[in-house]
Length: 453
Image (cartoon, rainbow, N blue to C red; front, side):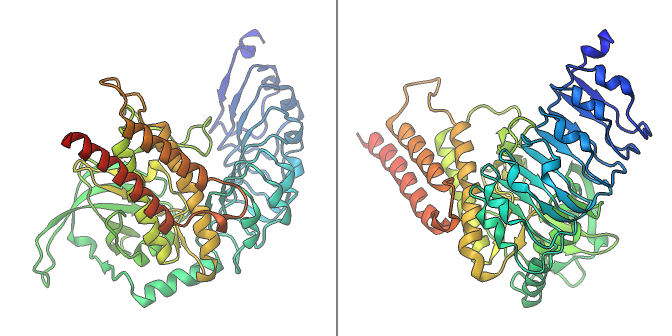
């Protein structure tokens, strides 16, 4: 008993459990419990004794209904019931009132009720279910910032989500209301992406593993009809059919439709066999500008691993590049859905690209003011992160007026972009491009003037 009481975190995954051992209720200091990939049909009432438990993962079990004990687990802020067998109506009154991060991906849920009770809900994952409408009380979710609804049954666009006052990141690919639009874009051939024969790819080292599959370096060898030289490329091959923000087929389609841009890492071409894949331009020495959110930061990025603070000129360059990329996307009615520093890459030449279109979707033209507004809000959080990860007080030399000035300007732009309420009232990416140019000119102007003096 005494030993159990000292446990803070417990991992019981892959144990073939059909029920949880009673002794778990003695782990009174537990703050994180993972019972994923078992055969649990429910959770025992005694879990309510774990008053310090904040995080509960029960992914990949056999639950058909929401376990009754959950609403009595007063300390729980993060809950995953992903990949269970929950179907029909989910009543949010069955979740702990202080839930901040809710993961219900990959069930058979057809309706959500009482979501407005979850006042602290910030990140809400319902992709791969059977939803065709959102509850009207979503407007009561004053903290909601991220909503994932990919691969559901929304045949018409769920406009109710515009009423959540702080919504910033949305995913909606693979629904009737977005599928038709991306297929039309491909048919119109705006992007003209080449179909590449897999045999022309000569593979090299691994670059990394994403949620959808692995990325490797390859040489794209000359086509007999083609006079171009062999080039080095990055190849993303999809292994799983679906992941948290959408499906492999949807990301593949979107990349096929995406018109190229100098600040977007887009595909040169695609292939369908032996499995779906993208051929992307290879960025030498590419690194993400930020690190992904942690359990604590929830919807906000962390500082890139092993990186010090960035200087303000670089932060400004990143802001301008991402703004430019987003402007291009919305000109074509494409939402990125995941504008973050961890999806922004810098290469060894200092070039900046927005990457990762796993959450992206094409939206109906008439909704541009609302959807662009939501993306502007996520861009505002990215600006806020840039300010947070930039140095105001350089260790060497005194702080210059222009550093302080650009720091303040980025801060105030971030504030304008992240206002709650009507997203159509926020600045557009065109407005922001102008504002950022003014900030950049001020910095450059001062630097040049100082040198002249």
